[in-house]
Image 1 (tube, rainbow, N blue to C red):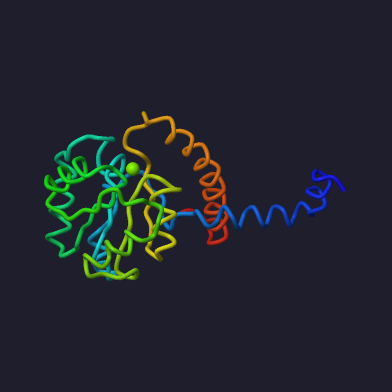
Image 2 (cartoon, rainbow, N blue to C red):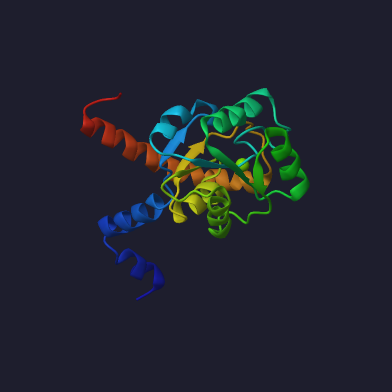
Length: 196
Ligand SMILES: [Mg+2]
């Protein structure tokens, strides 16, 4: 049998189920428009003690310094008694200067989606996977690593849409996963009896 025929030998329903289970691994726990709409006060009441943030396109546009609202966010979190940590794949000068502006700790060249530095971030904050959140704008880098570290994830829409070519290509793949994610979410909402 040729390779093409072998492929066709898988019944379509099985092929669909397998594909969906692969896609589902990448689903974020939450998908929202912006980091700045997260209700951290509520999350604190639910037991959250630490938040790990990506920087570029999650808190500010790529390469931009901390602005008024990002500084205000970190101040608000610290007043709430929530620990913060920046986890970025960017180089030290970028990450260090941003961290200084928002008065937080950081890990640079984090190697996301590798799980190692998500764990290190929790260790440094003295939190665990049940009391920590992750917020980032990239599905296959930020969110995938956090999911495998067992941390609740918030995927946010990128602040600035103009991105480097390798990120643009990843976005195309993200689009496929998010298409099914949103479809599944709508199905669940309908089952629950309408939109909230
Ligand atoms: Mg980013």
